[in-house]
Length: 73
Ligand SMILES: [Zn+2]
Image (cartoon, rainbow, N blue to C red; front, top):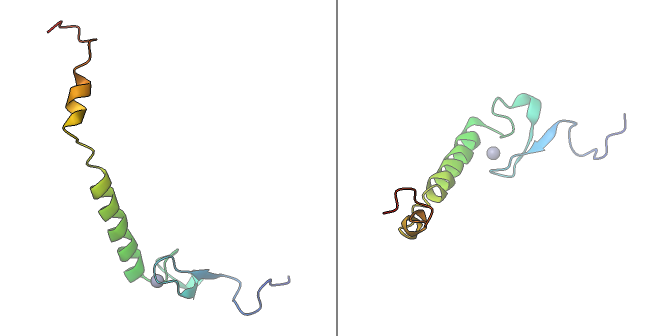
């Protein structure tokens, strides 16, 4: 085998949170460098999910009143 980058170990991975290079096989929180970064990412993900999962616009109600209402009211 010929490693492409001799400066990095074969399983070196960059943590998406802190951009630190770590050995994936040695991390219990892969793909993060540590459990701390794992939780940080989870928090960010949940934060974004909660802020974007609220599309309850008042204007949405208007579209519900379509002419195809079988009740005729
Ligand atoms: Zn990290």
